Length: 599
Image 1: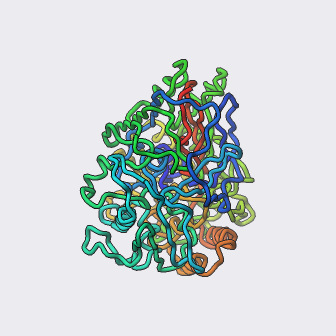
Image 2 (image 1 turned 90 degrees about the horizontal axis):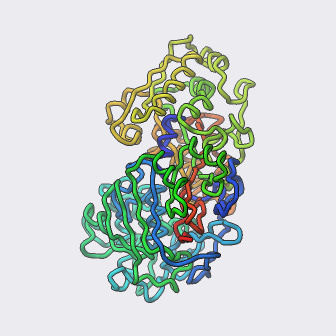
Image 3 (image 1 turned 135 degrees about the horizontal axis):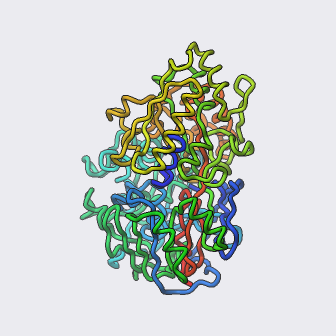
């Protein structure tokens, strides 16, 4: 899952990097507790499920009804450009959509005791019934479900919503590209209901029951059911792109006003039935999301206004430090994110393993992070700052992950320009002969400052370094578009990735699988693709975590196609009038809007 723009920015300046729930799923709400800068292990696992959960959701201690909440995001690009359920696949979008607007087959619920996020039913009566080899799933819908207009939600509408997820033309960045198309029977050729026939063998309906047929075993279909793309869409009047501007709600809130990338106002949906919903609440009268604001102004709003019911989704590190020094610990929270920032050498251009290894020793991790306004060891960290975290691809807490701290020619990865020179010499290059080129976010002074530090670090390590400024939008515009002029000039791309649910199956195939749109370095090895397929189709589900962990270390040892430039934590600013706040690691580190109330 793509993280927020704030994470992308940190990734680009601190790592040239770019999406749910395994990195520290026990994040407590603030409630006056001092925030922790430690990166949390021990997250939600694949065993955290309750197929019998029913509504209403357990009451939140001290919760009250009423009041308005304002949510300030640090950048207009954090705002959704469309709210079409089939296209939602980022941390910011999914947090809002899953918690407040749309219901789907399944969902996560925060356990009030442990703080873990548990998979529970949503529209379906349970978590689905698979056949013996997980090539078929059946989901039966609950009775009495309604749209915001009072009309009943039908199984045909859920099937239609799922079928829309296969449309790669209208929803190229939706989750269907990673899960619907490759897993569902006939999904590789089916282009969705707008491209021709609405009949599709992979999704059928019988009464109130949907049958989902798979082309290969998909034991994690119950987790994929959390996505809005696995929920209903009206059969009429829902053509893209118009439907994404005002989609019908099925959750506890509906849209009153929506300006893409700017503002979203949600009010209570009186057709939502809490008795059918085991996870969500409707404590707040109105949510106002503002995506176009100055980060420092947003931070001051939260910290200076007594009784404020405002939330900042990503506080500046300096403002966090000042808040802690001034004793405002109860208004800030450092929360883990199951995300990894990655530098991705272009595999067709940087062909020598020793050169890719040299990049790992040439990257000035802490200097770049500090220049970018990050707090090393708090908002960004890896095995360089904390050996217990390792230097791999999978984020802390993920099942099967083993911290990987390799020794390359006897040296553990860290900023070591002399060892980088030795590796370059081993590959046959003299200092200054091998050029590294990349893009950076030129819209902020922090972006330029970090790029300068990276350039300096590379040059000290024996590389020629050429950074290219980019201010035209998200760096993904460059990284994911092979036809982009800047993409063609550079030989280091970037990605940051957050898991979609607690499984490495949502991470490694996306990052190192041939043809994945977010494998921006175009890494491709048949042996790796074959092992991905073997794990997905032949390894029992209970043995898959260890198999993924072994593959991660093999990929990094034999090929090193990526450079880990930091695991993430997010700093939230929390108004003193907010109650029930918690970090929602089920969507990559965002407010858990399901339980928030105004105190």
